[in-house]
Length: 194
Image (cartoon, rainbow, N blue to C red; front, side, top):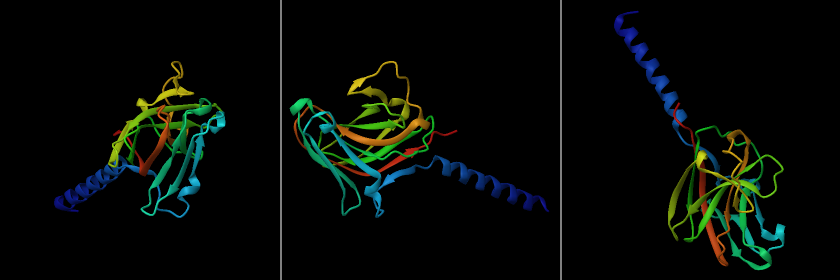
């Protein structure tokens, strides 16, 4: 092998290695809504589980988005509506960032992470402000999610453990009665560079 050939092989190997390294940094789609079975992965959980009367529902739109909509009610000590995935391993790792493309109605929602444990009303959450009628990308490092139970911060719960996260979802509980609508185009995870 000549010196030039050796150089070319080494260069090709480095380029190939670089391509694989760059591929690891690319966003990985957790959820999108183009498939025929997309709706089977999702469910609603509203304040009716506690006696409230809020109505929250979801559908997959003709434009392949998840539309979460309904009416928030404060009656009977209610005040929340949510949509979330059914439990499954999401393959999250320490240092990951969740990115969601959403279009809202100007209200503040929360993105919630649920553990694969029987803990009633427990989740890690972060605020998701929306701009009425505008698509935005919400980027949240896992470390920014805060442990909550019944909407209150749980101070001694510690940080979220990525390997225990079994579901993700959106919740509205802004204490403002009335109609709401949030659309989600996709949810991705971006892995931290190693």
